[in-house]
Image 1 (cartoon, protein in one colour):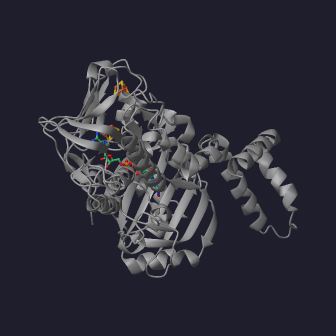
Image 2 (cartoon, chains in turn blue, red; image 1 turned 120 degrees about the horizontal axis):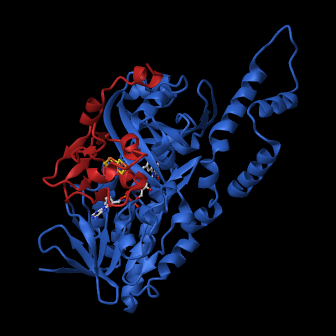
Image 3 (cartoon, each protein chain N blue to C red; image 1 turned 90 degrees about the horizontal axis):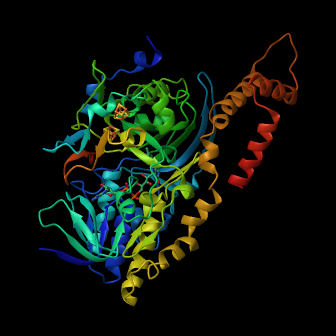
Length: 434
Length: 100
Ligand SMILES: Cc1cc2nc3c(=O)[nH]c(=O)nc-3n(C[C@H](O)[C@H](O)[C@H](O)COP(=O)(O)OP(=O)(O)OC[C@H]3O[C@@H](n4cnc5c(N)ncnc54)[C@H](O)[C@@H]3O)c2cc1C
Ligand code: SF4
Ligand code: SF4
């Protein structure tokens, strides 16, 4: 027996649940398919969630979402083998309403968000994998095939929120990218530590959290590291260039062990037992990897559309997924209302993304992924800056102190950085982040 | 001994044992060991975060699907057409990150 819904949303991650919620509220019948036994069971991230996009849609999210800690301390750090240099920012404003970022565990957060979609009337079906799209003779999407016996589901619109591997968008011919340079691999350990121990080590008040983003510390492979405090665990992990990793001799968990033993990191994680280990891909290339966002009868949102913002000092994907999912839901409702679910009828999706931060941020930061993963940004500059700071603060009496400018010149030469490259990278950083 | 192995207190099997896997009856990924014989990169061996690709003495690859994170790294790093067949496991099976 074939079921029929107005819309099938594939994937109950943040993108899918927001799409389903939006459609259910618009009075549409919507099926939210999830291959895991519960929403979030397949979803690994850092991480911190920025929930501002929920303020209007779920105004009580601050009190109701399963939050671990509200982030009040954000550290951005560069590591060399023996040195570290950090910008350590704290804001007490972030520790009170309306807050800024929150640490949360995805199996809990995603389950909560999907339950909000269910409350609005969406039908959540777990433990069911969409194995492909149903296409008519003209190549228009008319539903999905699932791995349940007789499990075809027909729909006016399919919204593919199936995450980074994006198999449905590929089948629909909206994208073909499998370029390894467009992806990074995240590996993560969850470490058990008592709440008061976490607060002591990270200098936090109860309920407050810390977010550490690290450039370098990845054993010569392009990428970076992260540390996030949960209530009674600390998440520590690395983000690694797939290409770098495949050329390397060192395995991900060894790199992570080295990161954890760095003098700047070890005191924060020492003695924490690993209670979970996992891995997940990140779509890293932003605009360069974005598929066509709409086809006849299909929309693509979230990581499946490469909408995660991975730009060195920022790693935001959940907020981009939630906003794009909601926009896809609205556009699908609008198209159904008008009775035109062709790619043209679904163009309200792109319009909405153009009008909010999703495409604006990606446009502004379109050069960032490339810049941040470049060899100079990854190795030469961190080394240069750390050596310079070390020189400035090393007392070499009886020799007098040197001028800082002269020292900077000396360190630049020692690091083998050409003035021309420095100028070019400086200019490109300015254009990227201004 | 390298610094990494010294400071890595967890044996790999113990590391993997921290994560729940609901094992499907059918493999979702298969590796066609014969295609691997001509492969010079062996990229999957270092890159797979679950260490599921094991080189054999006769130049092939031994693969076990059971403790797979379903990440996709292996098919991205593999340059040999047809060496890896990759799909998600059946609904409900595979890796399950825990609700605490
Ligand atoms: C290591 C790491 C750290 C990160 N840190 C952060 C962070 O700190 N903050 C942040 O905002 N973002 C972070 N991100 C990015 C963020 O996780 C993603 O951008 C976000 O999860 C995207 O949401 P989504 O709904 O598009 O996809 P996903 O969360 O991947 O959800 C896709 C869903 O679809 C389901 N699915 C897939 N295929 C099928 C199918 N065929 N049938 C049925 N169901 C299917 C999956 O099981 C899953 O539930 C991080 C990512 C990684 C890997
Ligand atoms: S699976 Fe691919 S990368 Fe791995 S050994 Fe075989 S051909 Fe090489
Ligand atoms: S999908 Fe990931 S974990 Fe599974 S075999 Fe491939 S690389 Fe290893």
